[in-house]
Length: 320
Length: 318
Image 1 (cartoon, rainbow over the protein chains, first blue to last red):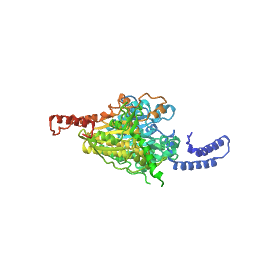
Image 2: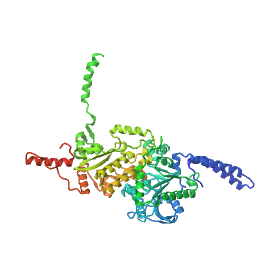
Image 3: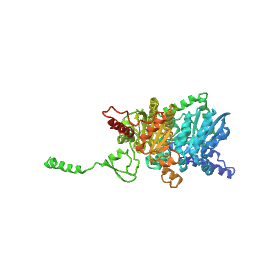
Image 4: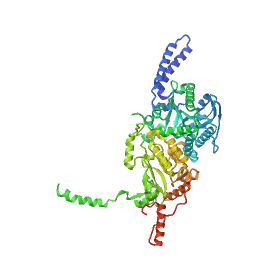
């Protein structure tokens, strides 16, 4: 059962018709509908292609948040072997919004860290919808430190609406935890590569993505504020999220032009949620390629390059 | 023209205008409602003399009170790409910038100065909340990088006064990228072994708090300052409960271990001098200059006492 987004409604209608036709044929023997159904399939495929080729910024935000989109957990399960989760910040708690641990990427030991949103009501609550508290950032800091000490490359998978805005999170130093995580990203002497696989939500994302190489999935987003938040502040109307999404330039394509990210990973036709395995494998390939570019570099060179990358970032704007 | 407009009207006008009182002579404390005379207020660095409420102060006024004799030089900040995203909400971003520049008389939301404080060199950067909410965009990032570079060059401390609603949305992801960018500036100071002191002022929120404003070697805040990542309204909407009194205020953060000190604005200068001198291995601040060649021994001692007060109060006159 596919979950359709609102702009996919015409597609849903055609796919529904094709299915109905086939169901009818199954009930009454001897009826041949395959020709008609196949025609509808072709039409649907063409439409899917067209819709996803011309997604606007707000539509991309919806795709990036799609419930069926593969999440951090799915990537770790398919791309890595011997994944050994490591828990806790050694101060207060273990944050389930952040998962991380030792793993092998094609036999090579690495540290993988990411935000996990959960896939149903129960797991979403358990994972706090991928919104980390200070413990989550401090866990990430601890794991990056560990990786640095033993020379393991760090791979981060970013998928979060943002850091959790809660009372306890503020009391325990949400800002300080994020600031320290960003600082740790800049300090480690091992390769650090990031992939934005869904939502790159503001400070909560940057704390994981201050990396040597940053990739984004084709229909993922990365932004300083959610389109809804921006609309309610600048337009004084949360319903203006379409305009806000467009103005913020939060798509992988725009950010690549701005020089804020290094590569775009193509998604299967109709988005990552229509073919999770293909999307995950594409990300795996990109991670391999990015690590390959960094192999053999000295710790100091990696650190220096990371700093220079961010100091230079933004020195050119979008072309007029 | 007849004789009325020529002769009588000016007289009537001048009668009326004489009764007008300039509007900005008195201001009302937003906290306790006391009417404060402008000179009294500025002498007290925009702190209410009755309830000690800390009102906003512009970076220039702050610098005038902070540096010895109020003397400092601007540290130039490289101009970033203007309007990198061609951003437009209800207004065009360049128009918003222009009106902020007109209203404040400043180029952007951060001012960087270099000068002496307690007779030793410091670089000071101050964020201007009145300029588009002090928001952090490429310019603020450039300013902090320039401030750190200058401090490293001079081998002196960097003192940073933060005040911002967060990142500048009109610069999209590039504003978010100022979080790592400014952290690079902090790292430059750490590596050079130079003190980086942050004074958090009202309000410091969002991506600013979650980057350079929380990475100081010493973290000081002004009394009553709102300091947070997510604002109280956002949190109330999320958790659907009322927040405790004083939540996310400087004193609350101090109590929760997130700050070193909460210091009254009028005592900040003396405290910053003390801390900077200790961190840079200098002897205690000399209370005053060497006595100037004077006629009698009595005159000399008064002069030195006066000079001592001048150094600590930043009084430019003496």
